Length: 188
Image (cartoon, rainbow, N blue to C red; front, side, top):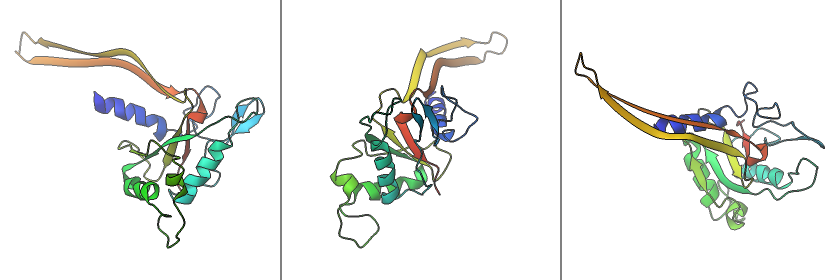
């Protein structure tokens, strides 16, 4: 049951760039042209890039400049970095280094010093793209999960064969309501 829930939940991010899976605005979850009253908005990194300190900083700046549907600035802040297993060590080095990661520079790690990703790194083992990465924001109704019915277990015995039968069922759905709830990059 847990693995099914994890796979279905991860599919939101696995399909985030796929235009076959659209949300209420008719767009994929992560695109450069979500329609609003004042034009279009983007929640994808402007230039595709692999996970790095610079690309994370670019994404965070883009997030902080987000506006609402009327064109007014809103306080969108990053909460946590979501990466596939292939990027786990790279992400940890980037976020936890005292100084700039992977350079001889003596500059501070601004992401760490400013506390910009308080949720740290979340490694999602069910992400299928090995270099895609995402940042979950503080937007309250971004990604959603609705539990329709909790898990129910049942069992019975087959009279003819004496085989024991068991089943587990549940009903839930996942999706997104506000595209500003997550930003992402498919990698370079």
